[in-house]
Length: 232
Image (cartoon, rainbow, N blue to C red; front, side, top):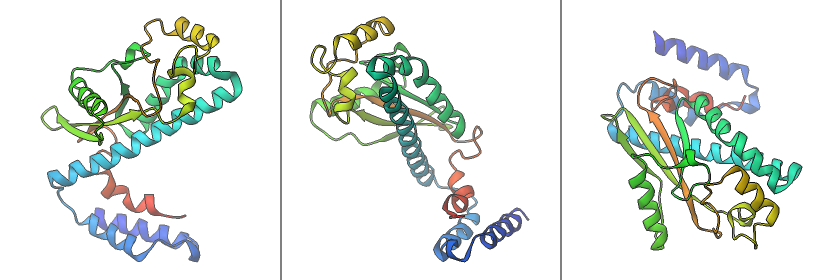
C-alpha cells in the first residue's frame, strides 16, 4: 500500500510539471527500482553515507565561505573575524539540524578551543597530518562507531587560496597588525596562524546516525531520490 501511495504521488508530481520539465525515463525507473529495495547491504550503506557526508561537508563549507566573504566585504578582515567568532558554530548547527547529523571541524592547530579533536577524531586527524607531511593524498574516510549505529565521516580541510591567509597566514606578512590584535582579543589560544596555501587546516567531522534522527539518515537516498531529481 505504501508503495502504491508513493508512486501515485510521484505520478501527480510528474503531471504537475510542464511538458518541458519532465523527469527522465531513467530517473523514474530508478525510483521504481529503489522502491523494491527491502534491505541495503553493508557496502551500500557505507557508500551512501560516504556520498551524503561529502554532500553535507560541501554544503557547510560553502555556507561558511559565502557568509565570510560577505562579512569581509562589509566589515573588513577584523570584522569578519568577529563574525566567525559569533556565527561559525551556529552556521554549522543550522546545517546539522537540517540533515539530522552532527557537523564540526577538528584541528590540532585550532583557533577556537571548541575545534579540538575528540578521542574518536584524533587518530583520523593524525592520519591526515601524516599524509600531508609526506606529500600523500588524503581521501575522505568513514568509520563505524557505537556498534555500527553511527558513521563518522571525515574529510581533510586544506587552505584553498590567498583569501584565507589574511587571517591564517604569516603574521606581519599576510596578517596585518589590526587583524593580529583582533585575533589576540578573541582567540588568546590561537594556533591557526603561519599557514600557506595547500596546508592542512584540519578536517570535517560528521556523525551520521544509521537509524533515527533525520528521516534522511542512510536510507534517505532511496526515499527521496525521485524528489531531488524533479525539475519542477
